[in-house]
Image (cartoon, rainbow, N blue to C red; front, top):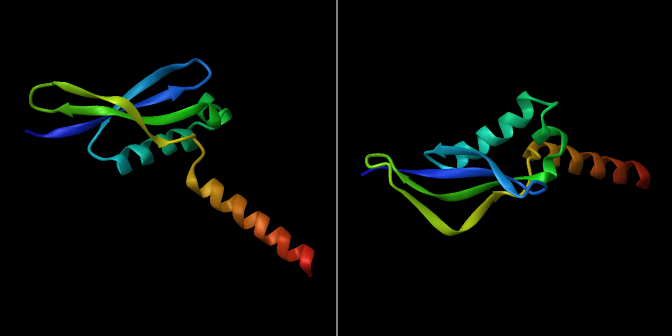
Length: 102
């Protein structure tokens, strides 16, 4: 018996899930989620990244097709902002602070 994880992209404004994805791991699904933002900069995910969350919804038994939903979805990514954007912003703030102190 092999199990995969079931994820959904939740639209906080529409208050509904707009897509489901099956993945072998949380890390692979996060990479896919962020890649959708990077590859389509005009998409709603990229335009309004704080409106979307990646949620872990349950498990899928690959051999039977049975889905076991979690009682409460687990937040995997609170927004669609890729991690490197946070890193770049933090670096810019640090550079600005260093420049002001000189």
